Length: 191
Image 1: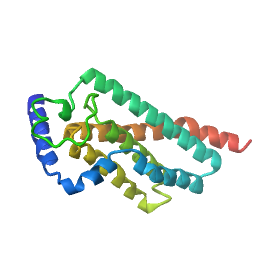
Image 2 (image 1 turned 120 degrees about the horizontal axis):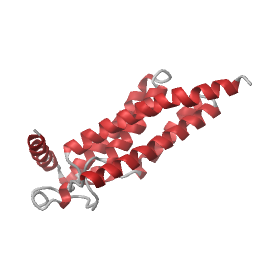
Image 3 (image 1 turned 30 degrees about the vertical axis):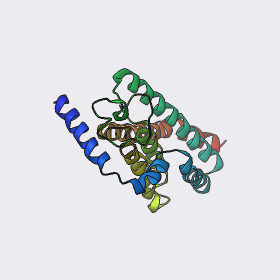
Image 4 (image 1 turned 180 degrees about the vertical axis):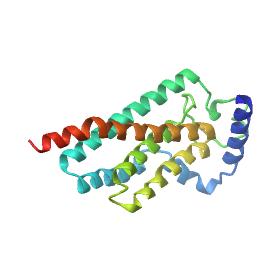
């Protein structure tokens, strides 16, 4: 079963990566980096402060940062345990694919997918009742994760598992916030 999944993963990666068109290389090479997304982070932080008290917004952002630390640590540990070569470093594949980036670390699972899906899911869980359009933020992790296949550094399964880890982590940290931090803020608010 695992062999079939890995075969599908490699074949799907080669197919999707080969769809790349040189005219779009700059776009995908830019989308795959963090700095172009900084205005989105600024907007997210602003929305927390607009819709919640300063204390609540601050604790939500601190929880978000703790989650990002957890997700990136878990991702790095998993990459080192699984030790799957990235497509760009796989000698059987790297002559068949388009490579726009050449990181040296391991592939499984995508840190871009896990971190971006965790951040956006966290934001959506807290702001979905305040802004109906907040789901549009999912454009970022979808593009961000897709870019990793386009530039030749992640397999589809890396991206899918990364997205699922990110979504689950956001759900977990929202639950922890509701159990541990929210009651504390409410009890101190009435003092």
